[in-house]
Image 1: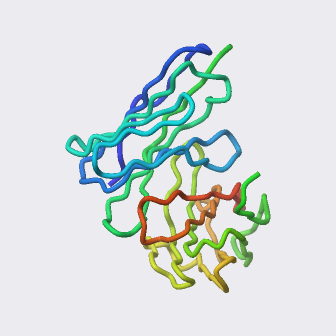
Image 2: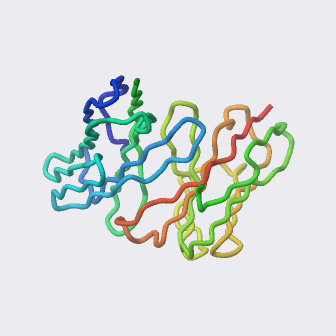
Length: 111
Length: 115
């Protein structure tokens, strides 16, 4: 079951904040976040596990609400390098990694 | 630079051709994955190898045949493909398929065009 991401696309000016949401109708064991720039490989950002934890590094952080089966990615004071398509990936199987990716959120940062 | 290397970067093949995609990693990872990505779509899982054994086949047509000769190498053999198989084929690896707290490391992909 593919997770649902929102919004599908965001256009920001440099320095503005963004939130990308990822929700599932199934119980989740983990949520992964990746960023893919055009013509490049998806790059790992962070993983959140069951327990409602929040993670972050630099100005990118994420939360995982296990009860709501939702995760949100927060980008603070966005930089031009943040542009790309963000995918959440969810694990529906306990004890094995079988990521199903959401449809993606295209983020464009303008100067 | 990605630590997962895929060759070739681009491939054009006819529907009657046989070709192979290659993926290599030297991070000591024991799980390797093939994903297919169409334009403006997310990656879709095709196959998972764990400790050199096929662990997951996502009902992929038999014209795609994976092979894992050793823990560092993953191949995808292609035969009698259709134009709709044109896509970006991504290889990924992780330390252990049986742990959900580990990231996937993706290669840059092979862009395949079937004519």
